[in-house]
Image 1 (cartoon, helix red, strand yellow):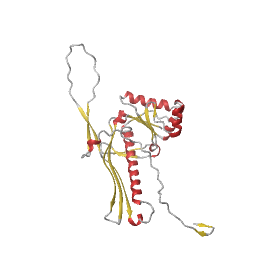
Image 2: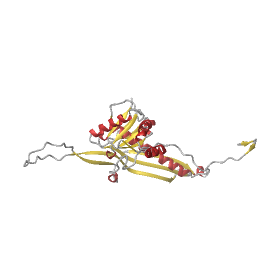
Image 3: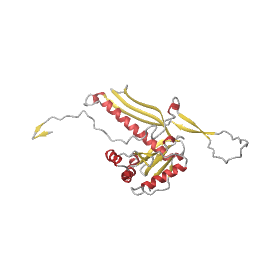
Amino acid sequence: MEYGGYNVSEKYSSIVAPNFYFDAIFQPGLTYSDQFQGDAEGAGSVKVFRLAAKSAKDPKQPASDFEHGKADNDLIPLLLNNAQQESTKIYNVQSQAVPFDMADAHLSQSTQVCREGWQQSGLACLVHEGTALSDTTAITASNIKSKIIAGRKQIRKQKASANVVLASVDTYSAMLEEAGDKFTPVTNDQMFQTGQVGRYLGMLWVECNMLDLTAAAKYYDYTGTLQTEDLTKIEYIMYDWRGFHIVDLLDMARLKDSENFNGTLAQVEIVSGYRLGDKNYAVIKKKA
């Protein structure tokens, strides 16, 4: 670097510029259920009992005898068979030659990378195990309300509750445009300041930019089969969060001194299982 032909000092910043990662969309008790988390200790799979479904019966006259039915149930398997791993070699000579904590920076990066893959696998599970809507007409600001109500109608007729919508950026933007004039001025002011609606039509809305950019989201399903889903065609996933289960068996982050080289390994590993309790818990709206 020269000023008027005179050499001047150069300096490297001690602040590391951030990388971009997808939004965090899965939160227990809001967008998924972790109720079986305690059952995962010391096991590679969780088997959940479900009583056999029964239907309402016709009424009888008073003083009638009981009709005895046989007790029956089935099992919902949830395999903890998805591992996210990231490991980075940090040579001590490298870490001594930069003005920031190199090991800590790469450990934070590894955590972000694994969490991003963890979420993509969750989306792949919802898409693969949910019910695809037959309507493939693209969503716009003028038709989004009817498209959302149609999805809600199908879930309600399947006896589940529509309480979460994971929306693509285009769908979320269309919803903001359509919903803007439906609020009181105070709510409008908050919406314009934050860009978040929160709840609309009785459902929690979460903007999910992974739906716009992930062409191959993968996860191992409850049979041990690797499934791949293209998320770029999906406009929204509407589901009952109580029926979508994520269980973590292992969540590890560490800095480990290496025996093979003079330095440290920044390592993260997450082992999880994903399961939609029934296909009727979720509907997926795709565009052609």
